[in-house]
Amino acid sequence: MKADNYIKIEFPSRSVNEGFARAAAAAFAAQLDPTMDELGDIKTAVSEAVTNCIVHAYPDSIGRVTLRLRIIDGGTLEISVKDAGRGIADVAKAREPLFTTGGEERSGMGFTIMESFTDSLRVRSAPGRGTTVTMRRAIARRE
Amino acid sequence: MQITADYRSGRLVIRLAGELDHHSARAALEEVERLLDDYLPRDAVLDLAGLTFMDSAGIALILRTERHMRRTGGRACVSNPAKQPLRVLDAAGIDRMIPVRGGLRP
Image (cartoon, each protein chain N blue to C red):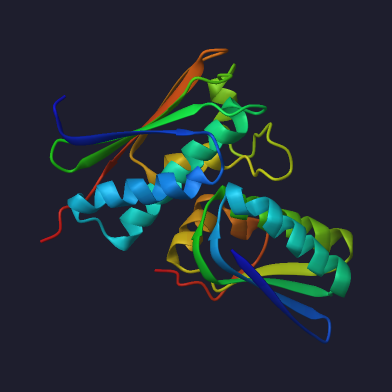
């Protein structure tokens, strides 16, 4: 599939970059003329995916997070968040609502929220080698 | 993120403003717990009117506040979420666990 436009940003898994990542995603998505609701959904999905890298992929260290955004088919935003961290042993379990290994500061709702705010979500992960979360969200064309 | 509070006759209103994510959550959780311990309210209201962004870190804060209040024999509720926080609350089905009042429900 040919991308109409794309960006790639790399940053260390420091929590201060959560706000940066979602603001960068919103700025890139702006060219699709999204509504405020659509922008809010994109920011939320990116925030959850990047937080997962920081909390789960690199629990005791700082590692590299790669955020890729591309526009495909003229009106769909594809968001990919990749880490080279710990990986997820059981992806199906991790996607269950309220499941978390993150302690009481986490709600276990990250994947549920990513799923509700995007049209599709794919998780590829290998223990010890990292995780890539890819989400797509069509942005409605406004007349 | 900023947190302010008003206490009157057993009711503590905790106002959250700014962006609530994993980065700001730990300080926010500590501040909310401190307020609950200081005032020992019968009712705790988490007023989200000033919150411009919230993700699942907000869900964890709300659920922890609700548990704290239940443990001490009080009640908690959420009030006035703007649209983006409300969409997160809805996606998490939070109103099955804690009342949500005065949101901008479409």
